[in-house]
Each structure stands twice: as structure tokens, then as C-alpha cells.
Length: 390
Image (cartoon, rainbow, N blue to C red; front, side, top):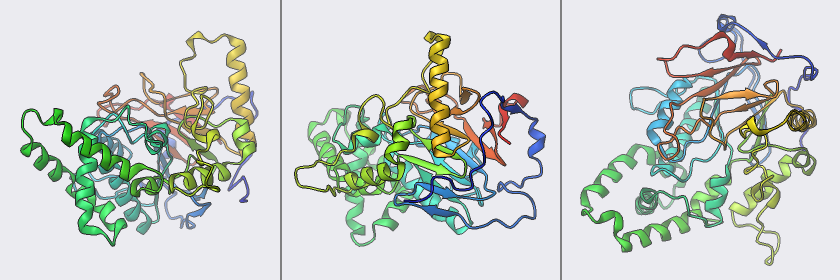
């Protein structure tokens, strides 16, 4: 098993508060996220799926839950500085590392388009010394289990369209998948033009969509195998990323082990015929990695003792994995991206999808161990939105 610390530095003592700094302190960095004139070492990834990432000197940006809203996804990626604004879907992040925190599926109708966009950006990013990583959320694991309760009707249609589109690319999944973002809109427009007024209530079409989704997302299905390439827990330098939240017993169990077990299950590879292979500790239960809300819930109803308990659990987890801080999605934050518990935890799900809160996208940026919130260019960043971890 790989070492639990890649480029780890000692954590500040619990009593030492994080230091707000001025945004101008980041001016020595290039737009690509590293010190001017400094040659960066290559990104090194350990684990399959990726578990530990050493990305020396890189700018890191984290984007929360997207839930099938391609327009808001593009907006968030533009704010992050990694996507062109000309509609060409070009990577503009240079050597930046992008981490998306899961829950791309459900509540919106362009799920596969978003997955395809991130795949295309990853290919482009690697050619420039950057990278794109995703972690799976509870809505990804729910769909692989066959739980379609939160699927937007348009997403069933997208699955049907995508299967039909794939008929022309039987021998090259990677190319077809990455190219879908370039044609998905025209397929959607053609479909809606051909539907009658009663199209959304066409039961035959809906049944076809459900079957298509089941084919794509069942364990061993093409999309399930694509999701299997992503982790449920990812450590990039001294930062740990997961959808819900990591707990001490998860670290003790082994995050590389969890990632491997979830991947095997999604690929339809169980250890025995009698074992369905659903990794409970990662994907099931209120305290599983993808469902945990301990760190991201509204704490207004917690007393001081309960807050101290949560803070202690978080610090124990970070010490066990050798991380400065944790970044999570999963629970929409009505007031935007924020940190809590001495900024040991960042909550980046702002409910940006039109199927959730339809809020203005926000992104977390990490440079030189300084974290700040990026908003629309129409918004002004305050000095207190930058936190220094050095």
C-alpha cells in the first residue's frame, strides 16, 4: 500500500488559528498556478483508481456538486479559470489540477455531457501538465445500484440518445465518450423538435430511457466502468477531497482499499458469486464516505460540546491521513463556499444546479497552501476569503 503522506507537512497545532491574508500575496504566481520561473515536477498518481496525487507547486481548484446542469457547470469551470469562455470547451488552466467533488448525476438533464466535458478537459490538461480528477458522490453510487428516484426525465432521454450515438463508435469508447460534449446539444435539440406536445409523457419513450440508463449504469455497464475510474477519496498534496466526509474509521480501514472496492463493484467484479460487492463503508449508511454530513450540516442546533466533538473527530481524521484540510460537497451551502472548524473543512457544494438551488457558482482555489473562494467576475473577493495554511 502506498504511503499515507505525499509531500505532507506538519499540521498547525489545534490552538493556532488560520491566518487571513491579502489577495495580493498571491501575485507572485502565474495564471497557471505556480511561481514564476519555477519548473514544476511531473504530477505523480498512486492507486487505481487514483488515491494519492503528488502535484508539486500546482494550483488546485475544487468544484462542488453539478447535478446535470451543463450551463452552470461551464460557468463554474470558467470561474475556476480552466475552461474557455468562447464555447469551444478548451482547457485554459495550464498546469492547474481540477478536482470535482461528485454528484454529477441526477436532478438535471445533461449528466453525460458534463462527464464527457470533464473527460475532454482531462485529456487536454494532461497535455499541458495539468490534470482533472473526480470523486464519486452518493448519486453516482445510487445510480449504479439502480436507484433512479432522482433522475430528471431529460436524463433518461440523454441515455437513449447516447446509446444510439455509441452505435457508431463500437471500437473506440474513449474517443466517443470525450466527443459527446460536442454533439450532445444537437442531439437534444433534434429530439425535442421531433417530440409532440405529449413527448414528456410518452411512456414507451420513458421505458426506453430507463432501459438505456440501466444498460449504461449497471455494474459493468459502460458509464459505470467510467465512474469506476474515479475515487471516493482523493488526497492531492496535503489536501483530502471526498463527497460527504472522511472519518477516522475510514482511514483505519484504508482509503486505497475503499477506492479499489468501489471500483471493482462498479465494474461488476465481485470476489465471489454470492457477494454483491457493494462496499458498505464507502457507499451505504449515514456515516459512509459519500453520505456523511457531519462536517457540512448546519451547526446552529449544536451545543458547544457537540461542536468540540466534531472538531476533535475532524482533527483526528486529518492527522491520521496526514492532511492540512478536507474539502467536501454533498450538502448545499445557502451562503456559498465556506470553511468551518478552524478552516480544517471546506464545504463547496453551493447547490448551483437548477435542479437544486440554482445558485451562483463558486469555486475553491488552493495556491501555495492558501485557500480562497472564487466567485463570478461581477463579485468582489474580500481579504477574509483567503486563508493561509503555512
